Image 1 (tube, rainbow, N blue to C red):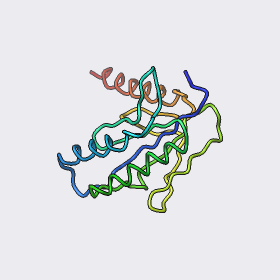
Image 2 (image 1 turned 90 degrees about the vertical axis):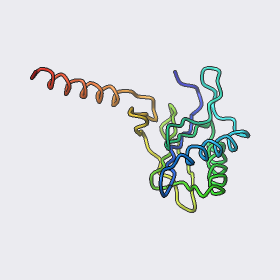
Image 3 (image 1 turned 120 degrees about the horizontal axis):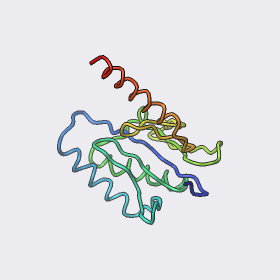
Image 4 (image 1 turned 90 degrees about the horizontal axis):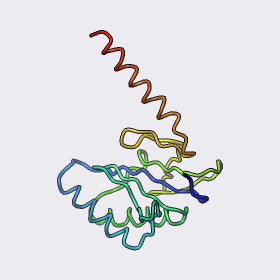
Length: 152
């Protein structure tokens, strides 16, 4: 279930001219350098600082100050490798039982948009932990497939 305190998420998109194998190597090096001094959140007894898949990265923190510090470190370290955060595609989300908690994260003078839910690796994540939207989406997909199969 939920912890008593909120979790802060930032879903990040990296600006890159072209995709290369070096991107993955640099992204891994950047994340390892930055997360050395970062606490992350503890879930199930394990420390988790981020979730990554290809060029999609989600940062995790238990306080607003920690998420800002981690994001700023990521921006600074990424600049050393000529990799920059795309502020228009990057989003922030606070997962909490309380409704009115906001997080303000800036990238080069541009604020990251705070969202109530977003799609991550094919499933919807919601700020209040509600799974209704995801369940309805999966039922609709199953219904579409059933209609296609019924015509066979």
